[in-house]
Length: 352
Picture 1: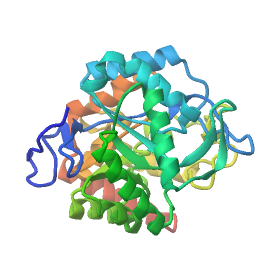
Picture 2: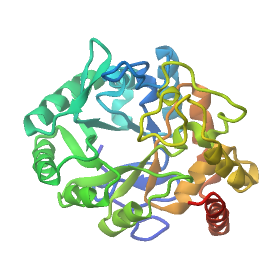
Picture 3: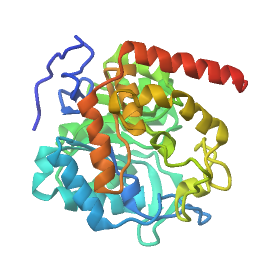
Picture 4: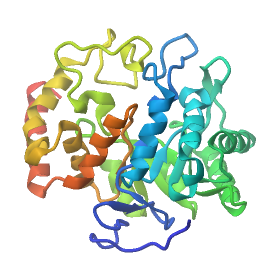
């Protein structure tokens, strides 16, 4: 499945046209839009019983959605071993089946969980021995003999320990268990530690219209890494579904948001200031017939030619809407500048 790296319409940035991306220095080509598989893991909880999933899911609908995505040209799926305490990986593996070699699978490791109790244990393991055990378990759940992109899921791991894990990932590459690796972190300095490895291909980090990441995007451009973008729709705020007092259902992490999940209040409702920012840029993002979500994805592609957003999904309809963004492509330079101008004015008004 290995492909030769090609130079796309933007020169040496690692893109292969507006619909394709190359994952950093790996030569692995993927669709410019991936899909994030956290939500299809279903309901699971934190150590105190707090919701860590996105609510109840229908596994059969998840399978249909994944297969529909592949039919529409999406070939990059991002999951993690702890999403649904292993359930997301199992559903993804079942959905892909014989089409496994037609796609690129990314998963993550590091956070501890109890699969039988469907609960996170509230800790992490940054040992090399655990990385190997976790990879073996992920391969079994996914029903595959290799992972294409293996990502450290401990965003604040100690850099020295992370360097050991980076070297372990090089061993995994040599053994044919993975093709490339990366770190899921919002810290550019930590990301740079993994980037020292020859087979480091990407950083997974948060970036969306409401939460830009200029330092990380600059680092990826400098070091030739793909930006795999989580929370590209700001946990749903950029879909337009959280106006008029709508509150996420019980069992949805947004109903009792942890400190690292801004934009939602303790009662689960969307923060009015954040909704105000969405409303301020809505007309620009929805220009040309785009939906709000499609405009938010278009902003990311305009923001960086290395961007591979991985919006979550639970239904076929959500997949079809997100994939439809590819038909429109990135925002124009003028639209990108207009969004920045508007948000600058809004932030100035609300004191940020």
